[in-house]
Image (tube, rainbow, N blue to C red; front, side, top):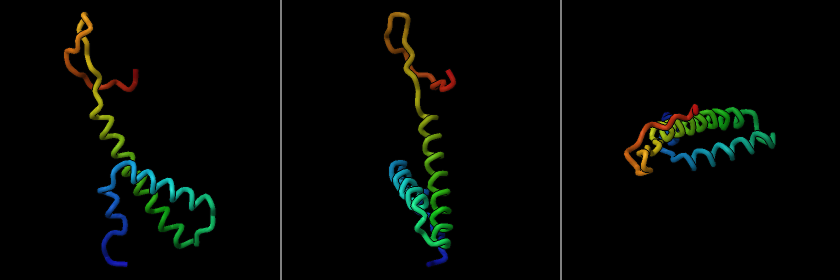
Length: 85
């Protein structure tokens, strides 16, 4: 292994790829047939993948807007989505 960060590629993964890799890691760990050292390595990668997915979801949430309508039902613009209501 080189001195480069082993999980550096995660920073560029699209959400779907990161999630797919994370699901594969969870499945391997749940089977319980992975050596201890490898378990530690893939768990660490899983944590990095989870953080990437969380960050991408937060970015997407920040970009989601709801369309505002006039009293006549015509679109007038957009407003930030209020996920609490």
